[in-house]
Length: 252
Image 1 (spheres, rainbow, N blue to C red):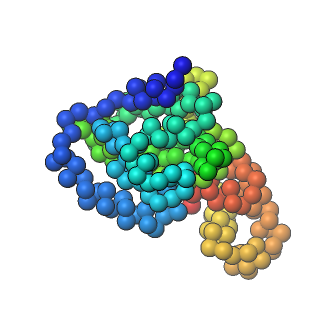
Image 2 (cartoon, helix red, strand yellow):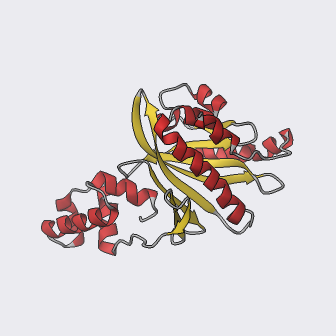
Image 3 (tube, rainbow, N blue to C red):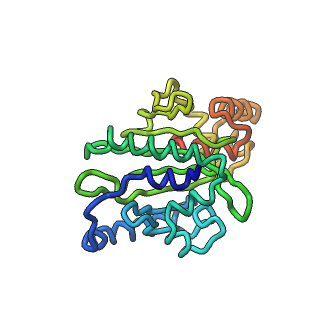
């Protein structure tokens, strides 16, 4: 079975999009382009009407070692083609779940949501695990997703999956269960203490553990203990993974 075809066929296309509509969103795309220049993350703007990308940032995590024009022209088909075959069944189910979620919560104008997922993509011939965040950017007149904003960063997890939907605010999130084939409420939310967040902030700014200890009026051993607590809470093994996790999941 060709799961790439299944994935594409399961994506509902918006209707009635005109050239005038594209002209109205041009300033929005330019704003995305500006933001992309000041973030480490890769940025896509997916066009579900033309099945391509309106914008692709100049980032290894978005280009995957290919020319930008090729990525823009192929759109999300490009991503599917560069995912390992064994993960394409997962991607197909996620796409279906994503649009079910949109039908359930996305038609209300006062509700915003973001889907976070982790997949491997082939970058320069090697599989690299990345985190994708997707949120609607523009709709058609019937409330179908027309444009979607996608942010790509390195994953803090050890494997694909770990799919969550954040609705309204980070405090209200669900995870997707492949065992139950549905969204389920997050039973636990990771919470960091103020000291733990401060350590991550200072580490991100380049401070050493000794310098952090001086800033916080703590001993180096205490800082090491706090870091171990952070690693345990986040399920990571080092400070780099902790920073990526905390950034991806809005803990900082």
